[in-house]
Image (cartoon, rainbow, N blue to C red; front, side):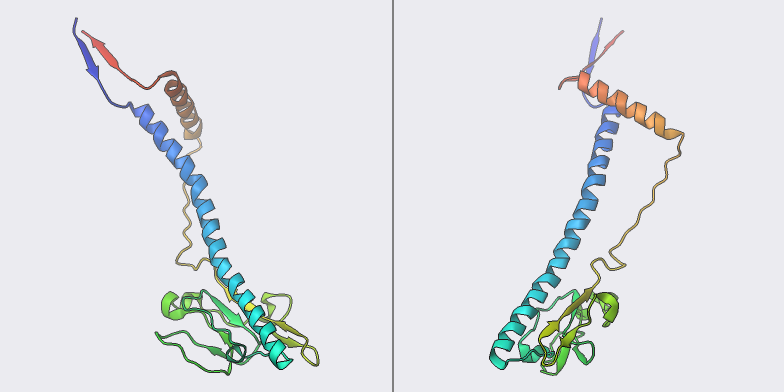
Length: 196
């Protein structure tokens, strides 16, 4: 009698590993996309806080609010994914080239289309929030700033549709259950013995 020992993995074991990796990926990818969107939204929150701080400091000095970004000292860093508006009309600071245009007459800051292209560019939309950007009251006792942007541009949104014939689903479930039972039954070492 001759014993032949083969080492390796069976097809069912490999299928189980692929199924487990697929399940983990199906859980992890949507969570990663949500985390990515949340991190991109933090830019808008941080810059709106900077506008608030700049407006409060300007109000302490001048006893009024302003709709001009250069006057209050608001200048976000390059690579901004959001457009910021301090008024519902006026001129917006363009960010289409490598350099920045310095002027005190801008009422907003455009999306950095030099980095991201025109797909992220945002025009002012008064209906985006419950209140329009600008000053309210006489004298102006309230200011509203607005950040508009696209968290995931169309080029980053990927939709995949996968179809599995319904007749195969019970067979896949049975194969996975059988493979899981076999994997649980077998401990770390696997041997095949052929007698003959």
